[in-house]
Structure formats: C-alpha cells, structure tokens
Image (cartoon, rainbow over all chains, first blue to last red; front, side):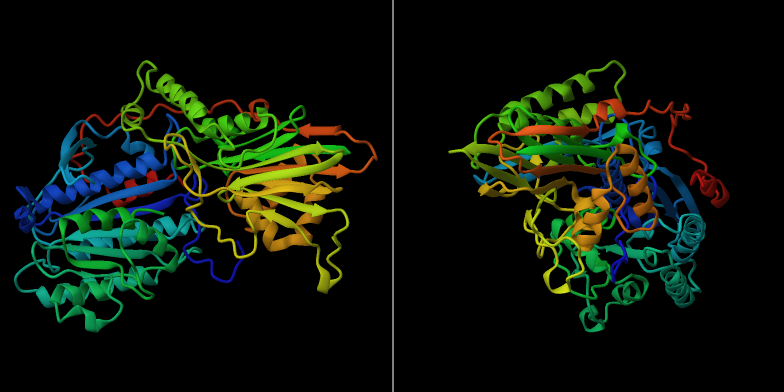
Length: 282
Length: 304
C-alpha cells in the first residue's frame, strides 16, 4: 500500500516469497549440556526443525504446499575448522521431502489442576545435531550476504530477508585472531543490514545460548548490556526490531520496547525456542 | 424494493482460483448474503469459509446475535472433509499429522439480512474480523466535490480507527467459541442505497480511497472487469496482494412491499476454477544432503 511507512509490510506470497536464513553454530562447544541431558547442538537443531515444520504448516492450506518462503539452513564449524556448510536451501515445499526420520519429543507441563502432564509430539528431522569445529560467524554471514544480494537483486519486491543466528559463543576462527574475528563479524553484519530491498533492509536476529546465566532480552540501549562481552557483540550485529514485529513478539511472550535490538544473550532453552519461532514468523 | 446483486472474486498474484480461500453467497429466498475470508495460513480454510456462508444464508428468520451460526454442525462437516483428505491413499505425512494434531481452519465473516416487518423493510448485519460491510444511502453525497460533506457511509465493523493486521478475529473450525466478539447492527430501516460486502484487502483500499473507490466500484460490472481492475491496482501497489471478494447490492425503491431481484450477476467460484497445474516431478530427497550446496547452486534454486 502507498502509505507513509511501508517498511516490512510486504506479505509472504507465491508472487513475493519471503527468505529466511537459519545460521546455526556447530562448533565443538555445542556439545555442552543445555537442557536436561540434551546438548546445545541437539536442542538447537530441534528448535530449528520445529520452526521449519511450523513454516511448512502455515504454508500448507490443504494437501499442497505454497512456496511462500525460501529457506537456507547454514551450519558453521560443523565440518571442522572454519567450515561453512549450506545444509539445505530451497523453497518450503522442498522441505516436505527431506525428513527421513521423526524425533519423538515429550514436553512436561503443569495443568490448571496443578498436575504434571506430558505431551509427546513427532518432530520431523530436517537437520541433525553436529558439534565439531570453530565458530566462524563472519564467514557464515559472508555466505549469507551473497545469497541475500542475489535474492534482492532478482526479487526486489519480496519481503526483506531475515537471518536468524543461533550461537553459543563469541566469533572464533583461531587462537590468534579473536579480536579481528569479532570486528569482521560486526562489519559483515553491518554490511548486510545496509543492503536494501523495497520492503526494507535485511534483518539480523541473534540468539546466544548459555545455561544458568543472566539473560539479556531485546535491550534498547547499551546500559542494559551489563558489560557482557557477547551482549556487546550482539548489540552491534543485530537489527532493531521493526514495529510491525511487535504483535508477533507478543504472541511468543516477548514484550518489546521501541528500538529494541533483535537478540537475546544467555537465552534459556524456552526462550531459544520462542525466539526462533518469533524471528521466523511473518 | 428492487435489488441488483453483483459478486466477484479473484485470487492472489501468481496463484489460481483453486488457491482462493474467500467465499460469498447470496440466497434470494431467505434474503441473506454472506462473505467469508479463510485465513490462508490455516488448514482447509476455503472449505470452512464455504460452510460458514452456506450456513448463514440458508437460515431463515432474524439473525440470532448470540449464535448467528450453528458452529457445532458445520464443524462436524469440516472434520469429515479433513478425514476424507487425510485418508486418501498415499497421503503425505504432514496432512496425516495435521489431522492427528487437530489443526484447524480460521475464517472471518460478515452476513446481511433483509426482511419486512409491519410492511416496513429492515436490514440486520453481523460481522467478525476484518471482512467488512458498508452501506451508502442513495441520498449521500458521493461526488467527493463537496470537501466538507464527503459521502457518508456506515460500516460493520466500524471503519474509524480499525487496524488491519495479521491477527483478525475469526471463527475456528474446532474451537467451540468464536475467537472474538461479533459486532452487529440490527433493525435498521432499509432505504435505497448500496451495500458492499468485501474481504480485507479490498476493504482497506476502499476505506483509504472512499469516494474515488466508490466511483471505481460502480464501474465493476463483470468478473472480467473486476479481474482487470484488481490487476491494475495490484500492479500500482495501491492494494495488498491477497484474495479479493466483493458483493455489491443496490436497492431501488419501486413502491412495492416485497424484494424483487431484478439483476443478479454473481461469479461462481466453482465455475471459475482453473485446471490444476501439473506439477513437475520433484527429485525426492531420500537422505539428508551431505554435500554442501554452493552459492551458485542455491541461487539457481531461487527460481528467478
């Protein structure tokens, strides 16, 4: 519509498909336990699998899938060292053919009568948990940037692409380059956020997972970062959440303030799931 | 009272009539009209929208504001359609999962009823969500030239302050209660004028362009013209890319105490439906890919 503020309002459709890029940290530290007996890698993979399934559901009005979104799943560190792997890329209908297995997942909750109940669901496996190499976030972002540039060039009228990055640590490509790697990550992020489509610049949402540490959710200024190193990095590498995302955030239990940065540092398992679902909803 | 009814429907860009989840219906025996927009991110919402408009327009008598639709009955019919689909031979895993997981359909709704009481004609209406009903009396200044007194019209829901977003109120195919409260307008004297029933994208455009939009609408006298005009509006980005449904009901006073439908031109979606596109056989991914896709290969898959 020709209104004053039209940024981030283009709807996903087969004529104007959305583009979501999941970046997933597959570094060796993802082996660490995160929730009960599950590793960070296993939990994150399932959260992404579940989100892709949700995307599939919301684009399936009957027994056929509408290609209203293109999805890339990019792992970094998973093939060892500073590897970046494009695990899957394709329109959502392609994902329906991918799962060869389903993971039974049981969730426990306390019902209104105060009794503990469980619900078991089958989640299709689109990506497997992997934990192997370093944390080359900058290289993964560079890879994503090239995909986004190609996408925007040809699909100028489509909704602004969204990157959702799941990581458990600071950018790291080798022992002698930590500072340079952080700077490179910040620079590439800014380059991506400066790209333009008719719907707005690409959005980068980051979620950093860490068990039992103070969480920092969608801060609006640097004072809220409490000198936390990872939060300082995420503050510079994350987009401000557009207002049109606020009702979506609320659906997932996040109350956002104007100029909120799209990241969580030290996310709990529950917030990791909700954050990924929030970022991939439109 | 003489009545002319026109109804047109069109689908989203790059989709087909098969994909359209809007429905409308006019019943000239019960003098009821209904329109519904099936939420495209829900499951089998076109069927659900159809059941809603069928149910409303076949009812006789006044609108029961407490229960304008017998949801329980049509929810059962909808569930039967789900079972039929899920139990098809060779059905895909996700459809079976939707059935097992009781995934539902959602749809917005608006309904209108004309009736005589003590020789006076009246209209009642009810709406839920962002599907709109507008009424423009023939006495209203529709020229748009008098800036102080632009044409006046009533709407349901109220247009002033209405916010269009992705979360309209709706009727759910499983939940016992509507997801929101109906708004209604009852026992209004029926005077010559025009009623418009339309789904959200058209309504948003109509509200933003009032007199200009009304002038355009009056020229939409056939499905072909409707499709052509919507395509133009969409190309100019004056209207959101969505499904579009419109029912125009014009009333003229002929001095008689009965409803006389002198002209009806309503596009039947089932007749308009285009043949399903033959899908090319996709390569099956039997195994999770172990080879990383290159940037070039990924770009090729973006289907430019």
